[in-house]
Amino acid sequence: MRTSIATVCLSGTLEEKLRAAARAGFDGVEIFEQDLVVSPDSPEAIAKLAGELGISLDLYQPFRDLEGVEEAQFQKNLKRAETKFQLMARLGIDTILLCSNVGTATISDDGVVVEQLRRLGDLADSYGVNVAYEALAWGRFVSEYDHAWDLVKAADHPRIGTCLDSFHILSRNTDLSRIAEIPGEKIFFLQLADAPALTMDVLSWSRHHRVFPGEGAWDLSDFLTRIAATGYAGPVSLEVFNDSFRQSDTNRTAVDGLRSLRWLEASIADTPGKAAESQQSAGSAGPGSALDLQPLPEVEEPRGINYVELSTDDLGTLTRQMHQLGFQFIGYHRSKPHVQLWLRGQARIIVSEVTEEAGTTSAPVNGTFLRGIGFEVTDSQSAMDRAALLHAEEVPRDQAHDDEVLRGVFAPDGSEVFFHQFDAATPAWIKEFGHDHDEQVSHIDHVNLAQPSNHYDEAVLFYTSLLALHAQSSQDVPSPSGLVRSQVMSSTDGSVRMPLNVSPQPNAEAVAGRGIGSVVEAYPEHVAVACEDIFQAAATALSRGLDFLPVPQNYYEDLDSRFDLDLEFLQRLQENHVLYDWDEHGEFLHFYTSTIGSVFFEMIERRGDYLGFGAPDAPVRLAAQHRKNSQRGA
Image (cartoon, rainbow, N blue to C red; front, top):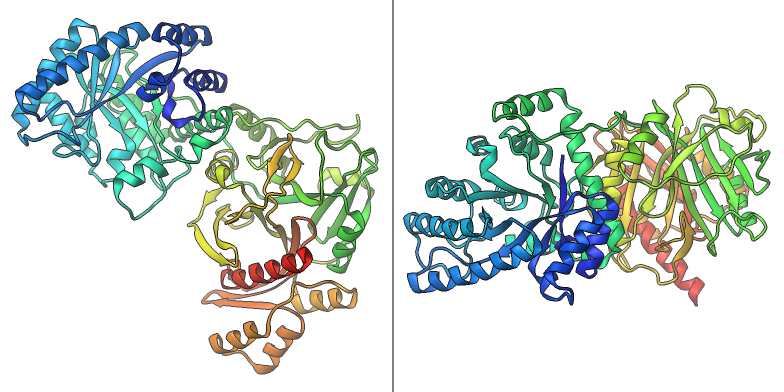
């Protein structure tokens, strides 16, 4: 499948955008007119640079407000079009995007539009240009793709085709069945964008909130399958207007974009029914007319969390808290004296002390932070191969000759994701810390990750495409600093749960050094550990002097009003700093520790089939953490 990206998706100059697209691995780009207008380089120089980079210039866009106008105005529009055709010749581009008229159209007459499209086609033919007519969702008289196709079909000109744009089609909930009527050779260009489910005017939605495929709420697999079935064989391009993308690192956004296309491509190629249907239908259009859909190595959802690794420059404080929670120190790594293993049943925490002598990172590190997660997968080699094809960067890892070979990649937030071959027995790497046994029935229930706001959508795609996790509906949680956006990534059976949170006001004092020297917002993350008896866990923690996150009296009074709880049980909750939630499936009991650096722990007990995370209690936790931070600052 040939891939392309519109320069409007990326930050930087036109030249920087071309280099980033080529470096990421795109086959071509769409030139957005404004990027060329502000460039000091000539069209010939841009064409030369693209050739040197090995990428094609696939489309020039946009050309606006042509059709549905009086004859005098149309003559002026043709003159304007001719100057663009001449410019395209200098760039070496043979296709232009024509948007349906939104500003100057005064004639709502399909016959007039058809005749004007045909005359534009005659002019375009003299310059060897193809015109891809696109229905903008807010077009004055033409706003639906099927209407645009009817006009193109009626014009019946070899130089006039249509452009299908997923945003303009899906944002209007247009019936997709008529896509099958369009011959692939009359689809002159294809543009893809995803979007979150928002209720707002479509123009603002389009200009500010588009995202890459897999980062929004739409079924683009179905959309692309329908396009493939027409026999379309041109570029599959990204056109994403997003405020965050245009402020982010150019190279990183380009990689994220290509990852989204490869994941989308594989979602069709990996599904035999879809692939066969699209290839069979496309095959009828003639040799070479079908999209060349390539699969990725198949991966199943992870079976669980093998371990969590924490890095710290305050080893004593962190390990004291873990001891208070009932974790048992197992030992030091045999070849890495700065690395420890702590166990509580099947909950495994690796603690790496960050010191100058340890040499664990080339960047300065302050505080305690979540360094990485090990996931249990059915085929670690396939998982790593898939990650590499999705352009994830491998984590360099020092290991002795007799250490287990572990491989992983950097997540968008700079943390590390490792793939461990699933084994019902004790993981092989544990022997590198010695051997012990813990009778407690405990495991890591979920890991709550903080995400930099400008890479939040990238993180959703990363965990979806690499680990086959599913994004649940997002929600906003109130805190003293504003709303915290939260979205859970999970496996189908719930064995892996990862809420992704975006803080409302990023702390300027970021934690540096995670992963490859990236900057991570210092917003608290936490590890939630499941236990059989929350009150026993709390009693152990109290006896060992744990600094619980305080819960106000008002919370328990409100709890009493919301639930019909036994007074003795309510008192027991309060005495042990335990919070409570209930739904029709079961109960959820939990308590929090104070924060060390940017990490805290949560101990939980699930009763029945409760699957949530105690969302009603999150504002209590956020307010308590805010108070403690304020007191610390004072």
